[in-house]
Length: 223
Ligand SMILES: N[C@@H](CCC(=O)N[C@@H](CS)C(=O)NCC(=O)O)C(=O)O
Figure 1 (tube, rainbow, N blue to C red):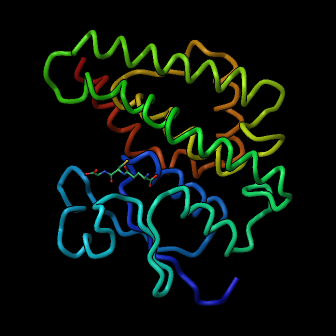
Figure 2 (tube, rainbow, N blue to C red):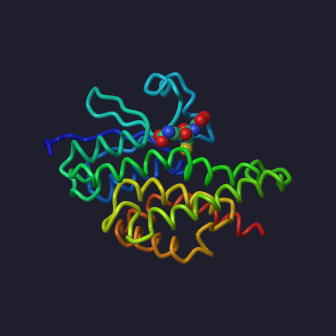
């Protein structure tokens, strides 16, 4: 690791992909500085931030003069340019391909399906029951596939040890907690996997999820 290198991370911890990146940074002690971009205040739409990411989305990484968007790319960049334990993004081609395989699937399954259950309840108005039921049913198929395909014979999504895939997946699956829904509660296999991920990343898990837990607790207190 080059001495004096410190990456700049622009993020909002209410964002799932930002939390995944944050966990990797803190767990592996990559020197970094967090620049908070509060989405709810529209800070991602300022001229200054739009210059970093014209797509106006977080996370964004800046490493020297190099600017990188997309959590998937950021995680892989960090894993390959810092001297991280190999298990995060294995070098062996087949093991690496398993991580890439999950991540490709993730962006059109776990991410949209976990996020969709939030929208019918998030806006504060009446819950759109039909939309919510459809979203829950799509999510159910994804959760079943996570169990039957990815976790069928192994403790983590892509093998015997934690990888970048587990980070992106767990952060998506935690998000509905903010609206009071623990979607893993009745799924013992995924529940055990969540505990394994939590043990593997230690305090970084709660640190990244502190804001989400606070939202959940405020919501509970209002009920
Ligand atoms: N594919 C991107 C997704 C990034 C993304 O959608 N970020 C959301 C927060 S989770 C965002 O910045 N949304 C702001 C907006 O769309 O206005 C990644 O994985 O980094």
